[in-house]
Image (cartoon, rainbow, N blue to C red; front, side, top):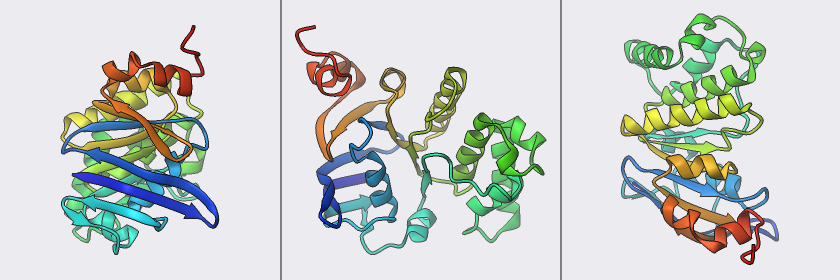
Length: 238
């Protein structure tokens, strides 16, 4: 479904991504692990078209998306949940959800998608007239996920969904992603919560200093010395 092949990205003279290759199959949950500054957010921004790549290709559903605007990629089924949610704080829950379906002109379809979001998140239905900025952190994360669902995506790109959440809400966030994946939606997730990610992802990549340094299944990587030494900060001798 999504193939990132040899992608590099620069901010001026600073190289954020260096020859990165990552693949996501239909209905697969793939996670990219890495510390702050590894290039994870740059990767997400490149895939959805918010940053131009300086080398390599990004293919979605067999089509090179290099010339596509971000809204065109969204129209083709690519949704992003950015770090921090990036909601419209002075708009209501319902208005924020409606923005997620801005490419859909059929009001009945929009209503059906909103009902689907409310079924998954009854709390949002209760607060649909409330301003997004007045929601709790967990509720705002629900809304960010719900807004992505309004695109009716084939794949959701998730940037640090657990950032700043209490442990109980972290568990809930992963449960929701797992539920969406069970519905057939592919997930590409960048994350720092290693142990929780190892529980849910089908395959993982480790990103360091803009390069992929390891890849494999959770079982393979949880046993690999590289992930402990280079990411978790545990020496191989330990």
